[in-house]
Every structure is written in structure tokens, then in C-alpha cells.
Amino acid sequence: MTSPIRIAYLTGEYPRATDTFIQREVAELRKQGFEVETCSIRQTGAEHLVGEEQRQEAARTFHVLKACTKPLTSLRAHLRALAQPARYLRTLRLAWKTSPGGIKPTLYQLFYFAEAVVLADHLRRHKVQHLHNHIAKASCTVAMLCHEVSGIPYSFTLHGPDIFFEPIRWRLDEKVARASFVACISDFCRSQGMSFAARAHWDRMHIIHCGVEPNRYAAIGARQGNHLLFVGRLAAVKGVPVLLEALKSARGHRPDLQLTLIGDGPERAGLEAEAKALGLSGAVHFVGYKSQSEVAETLKSVDALVLPSFAEGVPVVLMEAMAASLPVITTRIAGIPELVEDGLSGHLVPPGDVQALEAAILMLLDNPDAAAMGAAGREKVIADFDIQQEAARLGSLIRGYLNGTPPQDKRPEVPE
Image 1 (cartoon, rainbow, N blue to C red):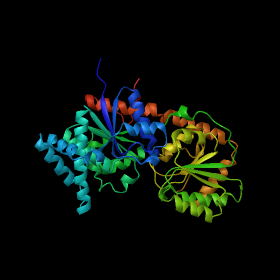
Image 2: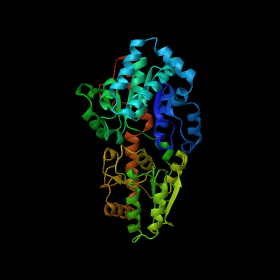
Image 3: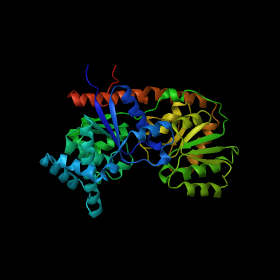
Image 4: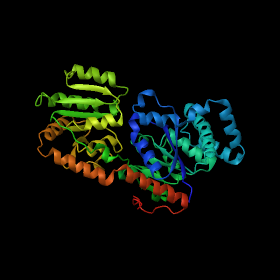
């Protein structure tokens, strides 16, 4: 019998309430037979551990910064790395080379170098064969440096949108060049990555969707015809102020209209005050973070999910809503049209357009075929965004690149 492949997952914070798709991916890879060591740069705040699944994952996760603050742990890691002085110095040079310039950013690069050495030591002791990173910013810099100092191959999932705002600062070109492969969450995402990667590396950029468990959302409850749902971080980029204004206008036609917002963030207090100022206190309900199970339960009884974001990758919450046979209203940006087909599974509106958002809300709630739109959305998720299939595609990439027989297709086939 062949031994299972030992891989590690790295993100800035794991697990988090806002990144449950990573947790699902890890779980599916374990089901495939991979041994997955989860690693996180920082310890996750208690507010993100909203379910027993996440508390268990947090307890088994290696925290890089915590290990770095232990003098003996850090010293031993650097001494072991110095057994290969040329590799150690080459990694230090790479950290310096990929600094965006300036005293503070360069100092951060040295911190990333120190973290990479400690992480590499941990991975070697656990006999990890491959490192995979999610989110191509600081934690991916650590992954790249870890690869350089240890020789352990790495890959990363490219999401966006924020990495595409500062691709030069985060040296996306170097990360793509040194990775075994890049898993892009959409064709739009891949095209943005290709804009900054050398052409020689384009064929190592594959499409692996984030995904959900459709069966978790199969049950449908009673819908009342007047209840909208938003799920996400309460930050400006999610467009919640636009949603509040559209809701106020829409209530002129539908006075019973209600909105529940699941999530938290830096602008919650301001948004609550804004809702009150708009006269929406009785119609808008801020309920904070909820577990995956609680979100799934809420999706059974609302009438539409509304996500009026200004910048996104391909939002997992849209997949969850569509898997729950729920029509969605969202913005025509980035990779979203690869998931939501306007008029078939929901409505796409221009970002920042209050009138268009109001019109879409009223159109959907008055649509006698809304249930058919929800059914179409569920079919799309089952076909293209099932986490079991997507993790299988990712697993095939990991195995293929480790074995020297990488898949040639942009979007790998699901292994039989």
C-alpha cells in the first residue's frame, strides 16, 4: 500500500467564520486520503469560532507567530536551516528582493522570513510533502519563502479582488513563477493573474472553484415573500449602504419588507446608526456572525439573498444561497457572472446603483417564477461548485505535480 500524501494548508488566520470554504476544502481532501496539517500565521479571534467544527480545527492548527515568539523554538529552527547555509542565504535574499521598498515593508519581509524558517522546520518534522496557501498576500509570501528555505513545493489559490489592487507590492509575478501551480477561482481571476505572470507560467494556472456542500442546503422551508438576507463582512466594499437605501425605497412599494444581515465588521456600528436614521430600525436586523449550520437554517426561510458588493472574487455565500434554491441579487463584477446568470438564477445589477438594486428586489419578489430561478441556481452549483468535486480537482493537481505528471487542462477533470 502506498503511504498517504502529507500536505499542509496555510492562511493568515484559520479557521474563520468568513472563510468556511477553506475548512470545507480541507475536510474533503482528508476524505480523499490526504493527511492535512493546518497552519495559520495568527491565532483566530474567538468571534470567528462560531461552531464546534471551527473550534476543533483551531485546536489542531499550528500557529506560526506563536511558535516564533518562543525563543528556543525559533532558535532551533534557524540553526537547523543554517545546516544548508546557501539555501538559507538565498531565501534571505529573496525576502529582501521581493520587498516593495521602504523601511517598514522591508522590516515586514524580514518577519516573513523568520516565520518561513519556523514554518519550514515544522513542516519538515511532520514530513509534509506539499504546502498549499489560500489568499496570495502576506501568508503566501511566507509560503514562497518557506518553499525556498526548505525545498518543499508549494501552490496557492488565487482569489482576488484585493491582491489585484496591489499585485506589484505583493510580487504576484514571483509567487506564480515559484509555485508548482496556481488554483484560480474563476476565469476572470485567472486572466488577472495572467496579466502579471510571465507567459511561460500561464499553463500552470488552473481553474479550481471554491465550493459548497449542496446537500447541506437541500431542505427548503416556508418563505413569506418579504424577507431579504445579506451575509458578509460589514465593510464598505460589500455595498451595505447601497442596500439600505434601496430597501428604504422598496418599502415604499412593499412596506412589510424585512432585511436580516448576518456578519460583523468594522462598520457595523455606523451601519446600524444609518439604518436607524433611514427609519429602518424595525425592518433591519443585525444578528452578527453565525455558524455554517445557522446560515443554512436561515437560507431555508428567506426569499432572496442580496449581495451588492463593489469588489468580489466569486462569493461562496452566493453558492450557499443558490444551493438552497434561493434566487440571488448581486452585482455584475469580477467572476460573479460565471456563477449567476442574469434572469435565470437571479438578477445582476451595476455596482453602486441604488435604483437598479431597488428595481431588482421588487422584480424578484413579484416574480411568480422565483422558485424556478432558485431551482436553476441549485442546478448550477451542483454542476460546477460542489466542494467534493472541486477538492477532487485540486487533489489531482497536487498529486500530478508531485508525481511529475501534471494535468494539462486549464480546468482538470474530476478523477474517477
